[in-house]
Every structure is written in structure tokens, then in C-alpha cells.
Image (cartoon, rainbow, N blue to C red; front, side, top):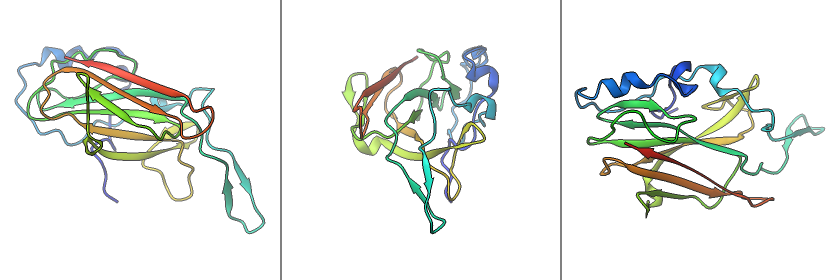
Amino acid sequence: MKKTFLTTFISAAIIAGTAVGAHAQDAARKQQVITALPEVPSHSRQIPAEVTATPQAQVTSGAVALAAAPPLTAMWVYAVGSTNCGWESTAGLTTTACNHGGAQLRSAFLEIGYGASRVARMNGAVLPSSAMYASTPVCVTGGYYTWPCTAGQTVVGFLNEYNLDGYQNGLFKYQNTSSNSPWNTMSVQISIL
């Protein structure tokens, strides 16, 4: 199975929204090709109480019948990566700490639930659908979000990755509308320095 560059990720201190200063202090870092994010510790993937997996019901054949896909319930920008800074955790942040830029600029975000009307913008310009180069299903294992999912797990959301190459900084915004009731629209944004 091909792994995206998000199959590994970030330290707990960064996820908690603290201590990203190390990236900002290292602005003179050499240009690098961004390939893999650091691993997210399992406790940072813990599911909020209001978010639950899709209900399942056993049927007589032993197969699992699944209920309708869950509506969108949460989303957040998970990380921003660039050749100038590498990957920076942005969970819980509204602005990056590092001065991103260089040949590559990427954004990754988690959305819990199913949506059907994706719109991504960078500096107000709508990005083409091809800018989303990866979407990894997210499941629940032992009360935590996990990815990639294993056979038989129920998908509760997606880890989406966008290519923002050509931009050095600006405002990245993403929105989506639930594919079923209550048809709510959610959005998330981050200011990339």
C-alpha cells in the first residue's frame, strides 16, 4: 500500500499548540524536499466525546451492515509543510510559526465525517481539484483516530493533502458541506507565513 507523506507525524508538544519556536528559529535551514511528516502520538488523535464512529449492526450472515455516512462534525488544519521549514504542526493554530516558502508548499487537514462539496482556496483563488493529491481514510482504533485504516474498520473521516506549490505564503482556506443531513457546511483556515 502506497503511503502518503502524512503517515508519520508530530510531537505532542507541537500538537498541543506549544513550542513551535524551533522551526521559526531555524529560518536559515537549507532547502529540502518534504516527504514525510513526523508521527502523531496516539494521545493527540483522541476522539472528542461528541465525535463517534459510524454505528454498525450485525446481520445473520456475520457481515457488518453499516449505517449512513456520518455528517461533518470537525475539521482542522493538521500541518503545513515547505522546503524552507519542513513540516510544522498547526493543530489548534491560526497562523504558522515558521516562515514557509521554497519550491514546495503543502497543507494537510483532517475532516471528520463525510462531505460532498470541497472548495479549497489560497489567497482567495479557488484551487483546482487536482491540487488535492492525497486523501487517506481515517478510522477509530481504541478511541483514537488512526490512519491508514485496516481491513474491516469503519471510515469516519479523511486526512486530505493539498499541493500549494507556487505560493510562498498567504491564507489557505478549506470548506466542505456534509453529504447527508444536516447538510452543514464547515470551514477551516490558516495564515501561512
